[in-house]
Image 1 (spheres, rainbow, N blue to C red):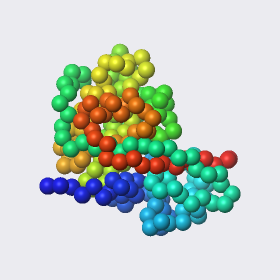
Image 2: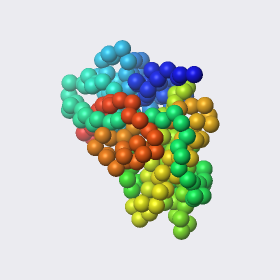
Image 3: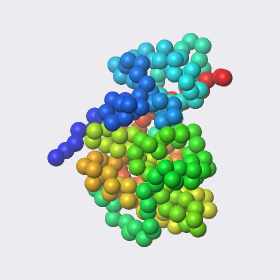
Image 4: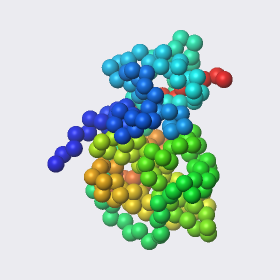
Length: 227
């Protein structure tokens, strides 16, 4: 059975109307994640986003609109555009898992946040870990690699926060965690996908080697407000 991929054309919107409805701030045709859960928003119907952006900027001063270019309030600076790749995989990954991979719980929260702060701080908020399941590898009693789930729709789950501590790279930990996470998502009868900046060539090559294919390019627009 072929799964329609329409939701992936606007994944933030469909995440906030499907599985993550409870974490949405609803401005009508514009929606955002609550700031503790993520810095992302989206819109439909060519909405005038200016009023929603002005309201949301009172809650968080650095955030993103994913998709088409948003209309900004008159007194705001122009948003900065970043181009990302959306990649998807429909099959299990044939890569050996030799490390002990554990499901992270609240007891691992401090370890997770400390690792995230090294490489991923602007996208990962205090409650992002509650949007899905996160997995990790410990070495020397230290969390050294993680991968998890972020945006979710009825049919798709986004793989996110693929992070390895700088002192532990090159050991295949990320490959094993991605392999494990893909299998876990497929076992839920959902399809794994991910987003990566088009300039991040190393991870892009890694994902391709594991079997991900590029579905499309997309824009995410960074909005920074003067405090």
